[in-house]
Image (cartoon, rainbow, N blue to C red; front, side, top):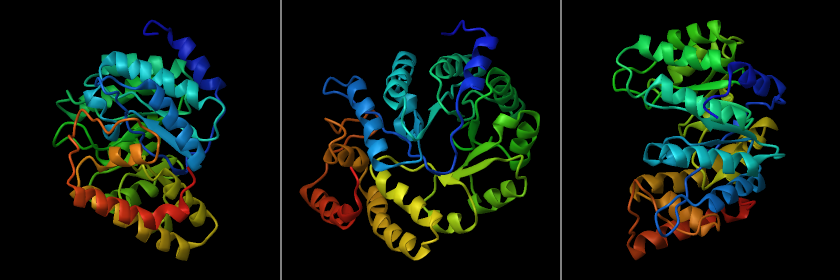
Amino acid sequence: MAALPACTLLRFGAAHTAKPFRGAFPIMATPYSESGSVDYEDLAREVDFMDRCGVQGMVWPQMASEYPKLTREERMRGMEAIARAAKGRKAALVLGVQAPDTEAMLEYARHAEALQPDALIAIPPSKAKSLDDCRAYYRALGRATRLPVFIQTSGGPKGLDPPVAFIVELAREFPNLGYVKEEVEPLLERMLELKKHRPLIKAIFSGSSGWPYQMRLGFDGMMPGAPYADIYAQLWELHESGRMDRVRELFSRLLLMTTLEQQIPGMRLYMMKKRGVFKTMLSRRTVFKPEPEAIREIDETFEMLKPYLRA
C-alpha cells in the first residue's frame, strides 16, 4: 500500500461518493481480547453498533481510540476491518492518519485512502518543532489526497496549537483541508472565528460537551465518545427538526453520564461491554477496577437513558 502512486490515490478520492459532514461523528473505541491484542471482530461489531445507533459518521483511530498505544500493524489492520464493516452503511467513515512526522503520516494516508473512506483526520505531528513543521505536514497530506481532511487542533506538541489563521491559510491553498475538529481554548471564540471564513471552512466540529449551544451557533457537528452514540445521533436529529426543548431535555440526561466518566476512569469501556459491543473492558491506557458503589452509580444513572437507546 505504501508504494501506491499519487495518481492512484487521486483516483480513489475522486471516485468516492460524497456524504454530508454534519452531525454526530463518534470516535470509536478500540477493543482488546483477554490476551491484550486488538479484537478486530469487536471493532467490526462496533461499526454495526454505530449503524444501529443512527450516527451520521464514525471516526477511528483518535485519542479516545488509544491510537498512541497501537502499533503500525494494528492501525493498518484496524482500518481494514472497519472499512469492510462500514461498506454500504449510511454513516460517513473518517479514518485517522496522524503520525509523529510527515513520512509516517503519508504511509497511513496512502493505506487509508486505498480503503475509500469518506474523509481523513489528522492530529498535528508530535515531532513538530515549529508551525512550519506542521504546515509542511498538512501540505503533504493536502497534496496526497482529494478526500476531505479534518484538521484536529489538539493533540500535537505542547505550545504548538495551530492558530485559526494557520488553518484558514491551509484551506485556501488546499480546499479539501477546510474541515476542522476544534478542541483548543478559547473554544467558542476560535469556532466563531472559523465560522467567519465560510465557505472556505466547510465544516466545524468540536469534541466538547457544550453541544446544544454550539448547535444554536450554527456549527456542523461533534466527535464525542462511542458508548452513547445513539443519544448523540438523536440530539442532532432533534436539532435538525428544530426541537431544541427536547435537545436540552435529552442532553441533560446524557450529561449525568458524561460527568460520571470524569470521576470513574475507564467507565467508557465498561459501558461498551455493558451495551454488548465489546467482550472485555480492557484498555492499554486505563485500568478499570471499580468499587461496587461505582458500578451501582453507573448502572442507576444509565437507567435514565434506556428509553432513548436504539442498540
